[in-house]
Image (cartoon, rainbow, N blue to C red; front, side, top):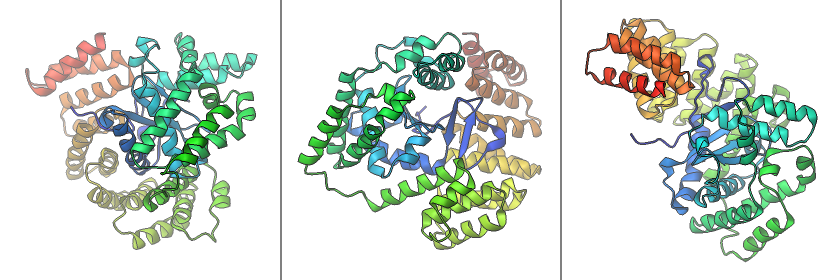
Length: 446
């Protein structure tokens, strides 16, 4: 099956199916958002192609963390923190970071890490990196805290993740600039972001910031990139307007979902009538349960941009979480119609339809959720909702199989095996579902 280039999670809070979703079992978390994923994918794909990497084989994840951090781990996986995305000033700066991390992948800089890490669950990888970042501060308290985060004897692996050599960093920089050149893009954003990090080097290194520990900044590196920019014919190529707007929308959305209302209003005051500002305020007011302020803002955006699926998605989210489920279903349907093939939209719509607790809506939800798991097999929430949908229709075998898939994604092999055995008994011998149950039983044993 074709591996989708999507931000995938091994953990999903079913009660938090939102436009911007934080997937978390504990501090190890990932953020999901269709709009941000689409934006990052559009920026990353040309870079991956320039690096002779298959874009479908590289996964990008967003970690909700305030640090300016980015890293590669567990094979062809790039992790970006929300702090990095919110601190970035331009799309070019984010592209520069992605290009640099792509250089690590293409250069095989992780080849010497433990082989087992390739098969580690995402939660473990994130724990290793964040825990190692804590340990890097060097204090007794931070050491204890870091070890607490890096559980299961993974401290050494966590430390190894941060042992990039300066030579590898320089090689990744050179590769990044070549990728940007090949795609006809300026490296100015990369230089600018490196300068941002360099200006804060003393502060971040002093506090053990993960980015500074794994990506040691030096004046030499900044100078090399600056020289390239000074001599490149592409340095003054402007960012496409669509990327400028997409970056502004991404920052507005992240800030409004993550930061308190007053912080959002400080950056996007009522006097700012730009699209990103209104977008941010709509989200911020909705998060404070002020639908009277939030809904008119998103309705105004929809009136101006009726073909924008993300505004309809946000409207559906607002309505759903405030108990207007039937109206939310209609908004989600519009969003899906404008962006068909979105696994997240399909799952959101399916969840809302299940909430109506109507047989016809349950059947419709089943169809949407089946399509969602075809597009994205590793979304545990989709499998969970599908299990509910099958269960309501008396399809116990298929419901158990969906639960087995969910538990397998979470790494709960004992529960996955139990549900798969239940599915095996209930499904027709030799059917596709029965065969899949056999597969899960075998995998769960290992």
